Amino acid sequence: MLATQLDNFLGGDPVQHRQVQGYESPEFMNLFPRGVSYKEGGVESGFRRTQSGSGPVQRLYQIKGKRNIRAKEVGLSWQSFNKGDCFILDLGETIVSWIGSQANIFEKQKVREIAALIRDTERHGKAQITNISEGEETQEMLQVLGPVPELKESTPEEDSQADASNIASLYKVSDATGSMKLTKVSEKSPFAKDLLVRDDCFILDNGANGKIFVWKGKKIVFFCIFFMHQELVTLQRERKNFNRII
Image 1 (cartoon, helix red, strand yellow):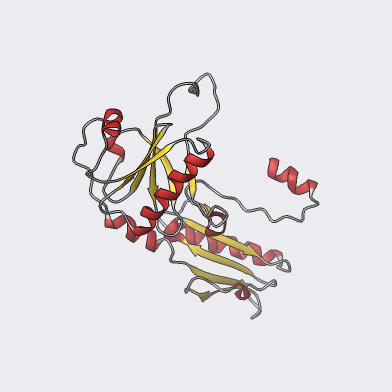
Image 2 (cartoon, one colour):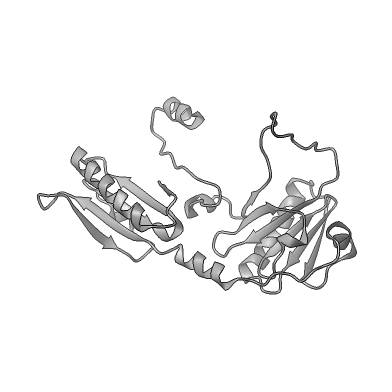
């Protein structure tokens, strides 16, 4: 609602982009070169009570990804750990950067950057960062989390799924031949922007990542839109893990 109000205030000139947590576009992630952190939040209500900020800080973040690294707040327990990722244990005055034995080079670099970001922004540069690797857990870390159990192995399937999520195909919906037709334009990403034509509609099928994008040219006719929606229904049925159209 606020985005619509701001758009109206600016005369309808801005282009709105909808982003969903965990599925942010590369363009959005590029705005945050030091990564994005997800924290627990919410609004206090009769069903939920927010915690007071006066107590000691104890948070655990999981650092995961390759191209677009994300930091997600997870449960404060060894059960949240695995050997394939990096983690940040935020204890207020001390910030522990923990690197799993099977973590990739991008996660190793980003975990230090995010730890420094927490120190500089949330602790005003007054916290101490401790960088440790799996098997080198400090006494302070053990006091909070307890003895180290057998940690979960890294899952290669997650990396395979991340690679598969980048697979996409670009389709054009056009009546240039006299009848509506769906044509595959390209399946090699990244796609060139000049493939988009103002007289037609385009569908970017990123179904492997659960998303289908729709691009509507400024000069399209109603029948083109109607035909495109019919094709979208077909694509949705073919994508078992499909979750939304953007």
